[in-house]
Length: 287
Image 1 (cartoon, rainbow, N blue to C red):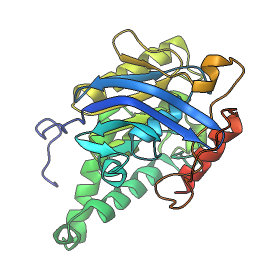
Image 2: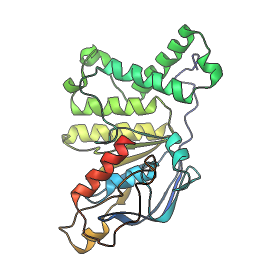
Image 3: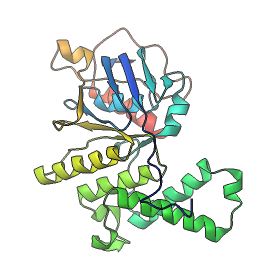
Image 4: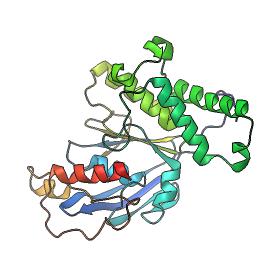
């Protein structure tokens, strides 16, 4: 990998998505239900809906972080929920509040170095781990440079270069950093939450152009948003209870695959609350 060239390295084979009647139910009701769609490798899929409609839970379910209760899904040929761990190995998350967040106290460089070291530790072969320190460092640097270039993160333009703290980043630059961290692992599927939250019209257009460019390299992209661009595959989420009661909010499963024994049987009460989703996301983050 040390000799990888950004212009010649093959693009990752994106994960195709086949989703039929997917639903996720937790102790306080359905987070989402009856979601069906197909997307080819390298597609840009917008999970669109109002806050509380289960869109983040759908994102986490499709990336192997939450267990669904009904329907079927295949992610890159891997069935859910049976192969959740395998799906997690090919899927990476950008920003997802409560699950994968940037540490505001760390600098951009510290985030990038930490992610590269973790990636080398967990996906490298034994032979790779035995390479000379200089070789390993060069490979980590190559992965970082590749990911930073892919998302257009100009380190030199930041207030203090790569020593800029995350707390000092503009929202669009923080989005770029979170995507770069995810792309260091060269995933087949990339998920990002709150894509258009608190962005100006110009920044929103730039964010979608960025995700489009990532998808064009071959990585399938799932992006949660309040309003999808015209050229994306638009999947609209509506919580089952909210469809009947506009005041109802989504709820999610109380736990994730990484916390065995906590999924349990869902309650029969379909009343849903925002706290239910918050609980589920907190459990997923700890997992």
